Amino acid sequence: MSNFFEEAGNFIWETAKIVVVSLLIILPIRYFIVQPFFVRGESMQPSFNDKDYLIIDELSYRFDAPGRGEVIVFRFPQDPSQYYIKRIIGLPEETIEIKNGEITIVNRAHPTGFTLKESYLNENTPGEIKIKLDDNEYFVLGDNRDASSDSRRWGPLAKHLIIGRAWLRIWPFNEAHAIKAPAY
Figure 1 (cartoon, helix red, strand yellow):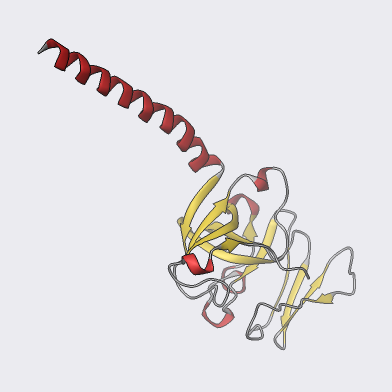
Figure 2 (cartoon, rainbow, N blue to C red):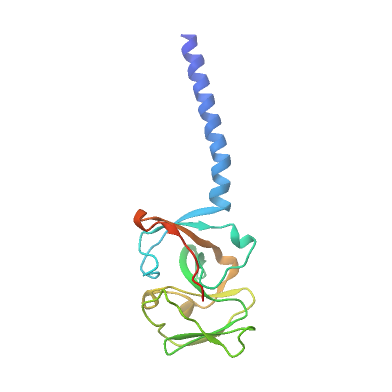
């Protein structure tokens, strides 16, 4: 009978070691490197649909600034307990103007501005706005512009609210792929 208790004790000890080692590996990855994210709603269609399952890269923005066209996950400025997904359109210190369905961006490289060509959209951008971004602000829009609560409604996004960039789509399986920012 003592052999049974000894084997049971060894089994419990070995299982506990596996659990502890697994947690020491998985938890830092989950909280500092990548994070799962479910898309909710229609604001990113046609690029992403409701219930798409994405992996968010939380590490790269610690070494490099977010770029135009990247799809990001961030804490909603008006309620940081909520997470949103949108595309970066405007970068820090740029002026963004939406007029007649077109987005014009003025920055140091283009002091007279350039029109943003968005091949991933099915529609023009509704509304009219002109906004100058500070040195730590981004202008973000959903790809489904008619069904998106974004910077047109609640203003620029502060950099500290950005969680990370969409890196992989893993669900639905038939649409699994790495997510790349478009070339403008």
